Length: 198
Image 1 (cartoon, helix red, strand yellow):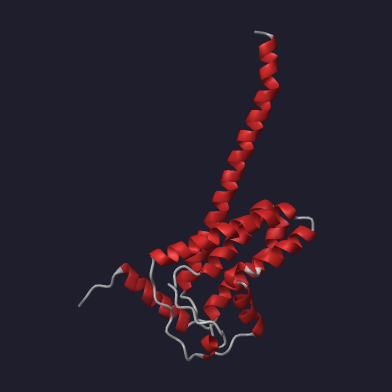
Image 2: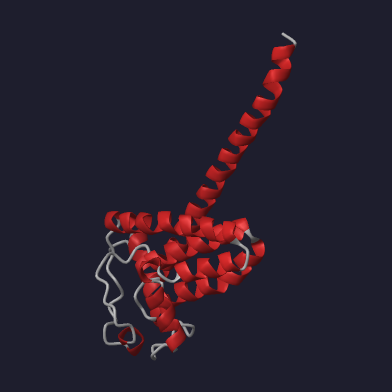
């Protein structure tokens, strides 16, 4: 009897959760779910969302969210090239047939989830209220990739984690830059004082 590897166990868990979950019916998804997946392709969805954030006075959150998404998207594609994984084999299922696109790239990670999580996390880190408003859309996009059977659950969860890490790294870099700028300003103020008394 052959022993299952960690990858085999993950794939079995993915298949069980994808095909036997009541949360993921096999019938055709609601049009809103289909639209969420289609409009988020290539990160297009997040451009008008950022525009709405800016119009509502949250320009800083919009700018950081778009920057995080712009970094996360190509990162997701690079990881996809390094981690080949087959897509769920459900081409004839109504849930899958509802989606006109037929991606053949590696299933891991979900690039939709990577970009959505980066945008949503960056928004939340910058402006809590804006983050609360954007989070349902992030989750809808992620769910759409499962509901239409384009990805395994671990692809989507991994994508969400990667996107969140990108946004957290961006926030850390921003804090470091602000700290250095503050230190430079203080030095500029203090230096003349000590120069005068030397």
